Each structure stands twice: as C-alpha cells, then as structure tokens.
Amino acid sequence: MLLRSTKKDWFGNVRGDVLAGLVVALALIPEAIAFSIIAGVDPKVGLYASFCIAVIIAFVGGRPGMISAATGAMALLMVTLVANHGLEYLLAATILTGIIQIVLGYLKVAYLMSFVARAVVIGFVNALAILIFMAQLPELTNVTWHVYALTAAGLGIIYLFPYLPRVGKLLPSPLVTIVFLTVVVVAFGIDVRTVGDMGELPDTLPIFLWPDVPLNFETLQIIFPYALALAIVGLLESLMTATIVDDLTDTKSDKHRECKGQGVANIGSGLLGGMAGCAMIGQSIINVKSGGRGRLSSLVAGVFLLIMVVFLSDYLSVIPMAALVAVMIMVSIGTFDWSYAKAMHTLPLSTNIVVLATVAVVVYTHNLAYGVLTGVLLASLFFANKISHFMYVEKALDEATSTRTYRVVGQVFFNSADRFVAFFDFKEVVDKVVIDLSRAHFWDVSAVHALDKTVLKFRREGTEVELIGQNEASQTIIDRFGVHDKPEEIQRVLGGH
Image 1 (cartoon, helix red, strand yellow):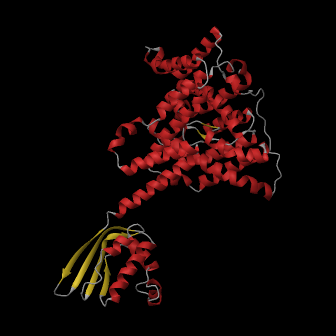
Image 2 (cartoon, helix red, strand yellow):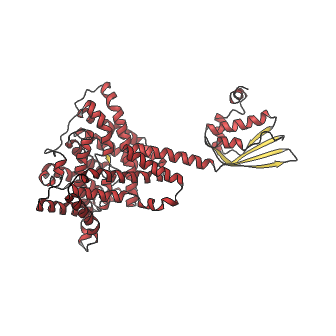
Image 3 (tube, one colour):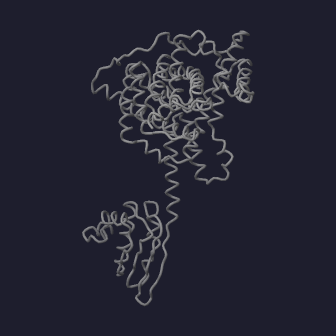
C-alpha cells in the first residue's frame, strides 16, 4: 500500500509534473528576486531559499503538487530584523522558524484549521487574487505600448492555446507563452524590461554554512519573536494553500506532516543561505493548472530553478517580464472565487461581512495572518450570536400542586446567558419551580452563573426549586462551578446582599 502510494505520488504523472515544474521554476525566479528585495537581502538569498524549500518539501511535505518557496508574506516579516541586525541573524531566525514549525507539527496545530470557516477561506483566496494582480501593476505602469501588447498576447496564448487540436493538450500554455514571447522580444529586439533587470543572478551553487551569530541567550531574544511570527504565518499560509489545493484536485493531504515538512525545509534553507518560506498559493495554482499533481513537480521546479539561475542565466535574463506578468494575471483570475461573486446576493449578511473584512484587512496590511485572524474572529462572533437565538424556554403550570415547570431548549453559554435568565418570572406566586434541562446544554462558566442566579432568585422569593434532566456534560460543569447548592458561596453570587 505504502509502495503503491509513493509510486503514485512520484511517478503517477511524470510528463505533467515535469512540464508543470518547468513553468513554476520560470515563474519563481522574478518572485524570489522581488521578495528578496522586499526583505532587504541579496537576490540569491531568495533564489537559494526557493530552490532549497521546493526540493526538500517534495520529499517531506504532506501535500503532493503544492509548491513551497520564498514568499512575500514571510518577506514582509523579515524587514526589521534584516535592517537592524543583518543577514546572519535572518539565517539564524530561519533555522529557529523551522524548529518551531516542527514542534507545532507534533502538537497537531493543524487541527486549528477546523476553526477557519468557509467564508474566511473564500476571503483569503480572493484577497490573494487581488494581491497577486496588484503585484503586477508596477510592471504595467509607466511603460511603452510594447509591454501592453506582449501582455495581451501572452494572455491570448494562455487561454486559447489549450483549444488547439492535439498540441493544445500536450504542452502547458503558460510555458508556451513564456517561450514564444521571449523569442519574439529577442528576434525583433524589442526594448522591454526583462528578468535580468530584476537583479543580479547568482553564478554559484549554494553551500552549507552555519549562521555567524553568537550562540547565547541575547541572540535568542533577538530572533525568537521574528521566528515565532514567521512560523505561525508560514504554517497558516501553507495550511490554507493545502486546503485550496485539496479542493482543486479533489484529494486529501496530511496537514500534520505538512507542518513538520515546512519546518524541515526552512531549517535546510537557513543552512544553505536562504530565507524562510512557505507554501505559495499562486505557484501551486500554476502547478495544478499546468498539469502538476505529484511530488515530482515540486522537485523539478526546485532543480530547474537552480539549473536555470546558475547555468542558464544568460538565456534566463532575456525573458520579458511581460510574459511572466501574463502568467501571474492568469493565476490571479484563476485564484479568485468567481462563484462567490455570483452567489453573493443570496448569502447571509454575516457571511458577506466575514469575506469582505478578510479581503479588506489582507489587501490593506498585505499580511495574510491579520486577515485570517480577523475573519475567524468575526465568524466566531456571528456564530455565537446565531446559536444564542436558538435557545428558548417552554412554560407549563400545574395549578393543583402550584408548580411551574420551565423546559429549557437549546445552548446556554456566554452569549445566551442573559436571555436564559430573562425567560423566568421571579415574581410569580407558586410553591415550586421545576427547571427541566433535558433538552439544554450548558457550555461554560457564564451559563452556570446564569443558572445559579436563577435558582437563588427564586429561593429568595420563597420558592422551592428543582433541577432535572441535566445531561452528563452539563451536570459535570454545573457540579464543578455551580454554587446554588453551596451555602458558603451564595453570598458572593448575590453580591453580598
């Protein structure tokens, strides 16, 4: 079984994985250079990181077909560290990031993804689509008409080439676009911005090195806050991307293994002179759309990246940026959840608020973590508010015995506790009150406090109170935190009166 699964992951789609890996490698180069510039380090730091992470994650990652490398979200978190302490401290922080991610992987932190609502995922995806498109705008402003013509031609090839008989299905259209536009630019001598203009490409292979920093507590104090932030953002983006690729390919992935794999990849990157990275939704979608499905695509992307950068830099440097802009616009269009835009008017207001808030925060801050946390917080608040309205109390009076029965139905927790108390009539003159909890569930201390308050108010009016029907979980929390049957605690609940 394991052998069959491994064989499928690596050799189940060789042609598709190799061609997709080549496309991804070409698209990784300008991004890795751009992210290095954002972080304030030499372009080779981002390129070495992308090579190293893509290769290592192919072996140790939990999501075949997903591409990991240097990313903009991670680069933004490194700026201050690099500016204040330099590259060596960044390499040390990258290694520590990997260690933290491995620990979080063993702590099963991926289970926290279950708290991310579908609306948050939609907001995350749409925000990324907008950010990917916005990142292309500098290449499309203050340029000659040639750039617009090449970009338009590139988009035409990307979307029309697959419809050609036979050959359209053999080659990924993004690769055809890059090769064709490069040939056109070179053949006609068109003066446009190229990959070579992005920065100097490295001409040597990466070597193993240990960061030149003092191994003491002071160093740890400097790098730990950055490493922790990098680890959390990296895992968050990786797990979100894995979920999206799961949906695109209709397959499952091992999220816990992915967490540990990201950690191993970042340790390797730091030891080879690279910066920290994580999964890339844009490149992963390029990979999937180009036919990549297995681990081989990530390995090929990393290896091709290094070969092209180190040994084929003369050819690589003449690729027009317009070709890569066209590919990234295709990614942006493919990433955006258009089905949400069509169905938006039919969805609940709370869902739309979560989606739009997530998009707004991500686009404004350029930090995916802030947007996702905002979305999760809002989704949780809306959920709590919705559930609180599903609680009600049925009343019945037995006049023969002067007994009022309250049957509580629903969930009692912090957001419904006050409503729970409001259902009871404390001024009604009866000998006994029965509170039937057989169809209710008490979730937290606020709920128990509301029950205490209700029982004690009735007793203060001289009414006998009986609780019946508690389920085991509710009984446990009531016994532990309730005080209505503990005389020594009653004065505290009643506020000393």
